[in-house]
Amino acid sequence: MLRPPMADPSFQSLPGFRDFIPRECAVRNYLFETWRGVARRCGYSEYETPILEDTGLYLKKSGGELSAQLFRFEDQGGRDVTLRPEVTASLARLVAQHQRDFPKPMKWFEIGQCFRYEKPQKGRGREFHQFNVDILGEAGPAADAELIALAIETMLAFGFVAGDFVVRVSDRKAWMDFAARHAIAEECVPDFLNIIDKLEREKPAALATKLAAFNLTPEAVREFIAMPTNASSAYQAILADLTARGFAGCVQLDLSIVRGLAYYTGVVFEVFDAKKSMRAVAGGGRYDTLVATLSGGNVDLPATGFAMGDYVIRNLIEETTHAAMQMEVWLQRNAAACDVFVVVADESQRPTALRLVTDLRRAGIAADLPLAAAKVPKQFQSAERSRARFALIVGTEYPALKLKILASRAEETGHADSAVAWLTARLQQPDGPLLA
Image (cartoon, rainbow, N blue to C red; front, side):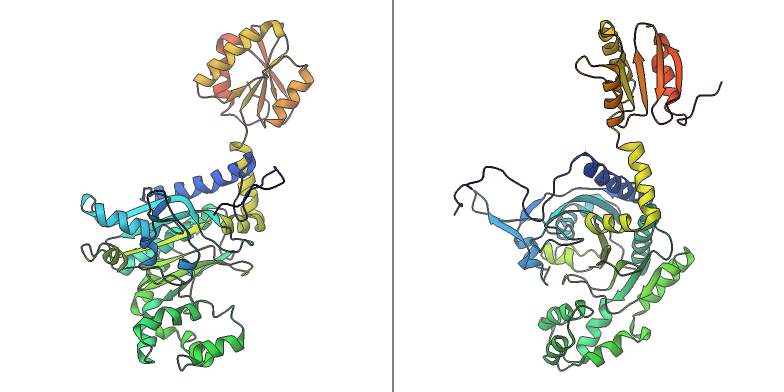
């Protein structure tokens, strides 16, 4: 039932949802461009799936807390639908339908919105953007190593250096073997792994009580975690691969990592900041049975993948000086409303200025001008607010033009007949005075 209208006519965004004013949108674009650039240079193809899916897609194999965090409703056609909380299930559905059309392995990536009904807090909202990368059709550990390498490449592309972050790698199969040795029924394994997933955050008394239900103690669990030999041979192969790439120093074995979703079947990993000041920056792993499950057994395709959300990676960038500086440099170069602001110093020349702006825009130069007559100082203020690099002054001297470099206040002169070529070349130069 709909609630009655609010007495106060003013509205705000819903809790956990965000507006993107221009700077916020520019930061988001920085994340997207970095993600997309890394994926493409590593040989991945981009895809997209719908934001709205059949709810059954997520209930069938996700498990854990996810089913209680769905934005779920009945649409006008009586269908039980959900705003996607993650992308892997949608990808598995898509691949089951179209995998015959693509050579294996399939290296795909996607950037899109997801929705989870969680408590909004640092690094977590109810609406978020996620970078998803997957390799499908390759069962060997080389695919897992390639994926972890891409996660590391992504962190380096954001300006982080060795020591800023660590990839904690675990082995879910080792935990399945542990559960079998301790007679934990198969249907109870997801609940057991949820306990392990929260091991570091659970209070000691509560942890002991939960493990007692499986005839286990915290000491027995921690003893298992502390033994590197409990990891399968797949982990050793992955470590050797990453060592050959020069990434061994970024990786740590940590069997306490199990990931919260039930569809993981093998090696799993999470990327953390080295100071552990926030939750995982990224995470994923092998999910060899999900495509078969969602296709009713018609398609059996091994797969591994990971996701990185925009909330946590942005927080870590802003808290890491060198990464934050790199982002600010990008924003200064890419977040300006225009490159050239045309100052109309003589209003009788406005038709000329309009034609000049049009020519610049058609040449691919971002250009703007005041929409109404204004004093020259006010126009310069508008130019600076737009974060333009240059102010091009059209005045009584036309066709002679004056170009002011806003960062240094240096000036140059040119001619209207060559304005497009002049500005095109000038934008490729640094902001200091142009040397003859």
